[in-house]
Image 1 (cartoon, helix red, strand yellow):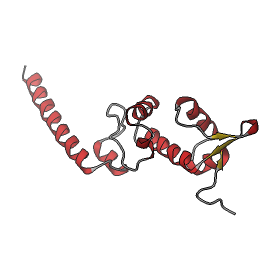
Image 2: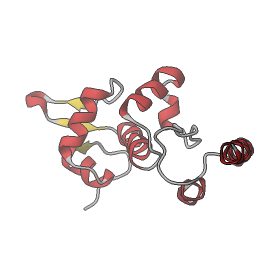
Image 3: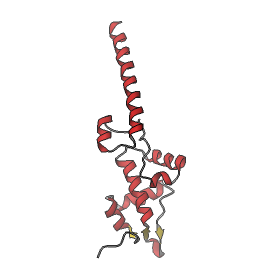
Image 4: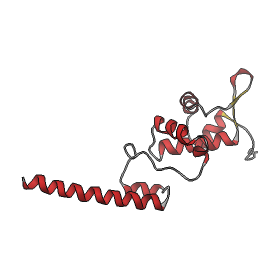
Length: 139
């Protein structure tokens, strides 16, 4: 019989639901102060539904959006815990985001307005690079 959506999860159930190993969840507890499952006698962990939602978003930021651990810590510090439970995602760290703009857009987009600004900035940078390449090649 499956547990209801409001039921607490053990570490093995949480790990299976999130698709990460149990040791990863324990590691995240050491890196992220906001990851604090309930602990019963003997140290057994129980994850509340909100804990699962936060961990799912941490997983997404780290493994899909290209954030570093320090980047997620900074996001939490700057925007608070609500930023990790929100469905509106901040723009990923440019220096650590893998792939091209098209590859990142295929995975998912924080907002069309953000992409419009990024595309304009990218076009300006590419034009500047082309001018510099032309000057360096002509010299």
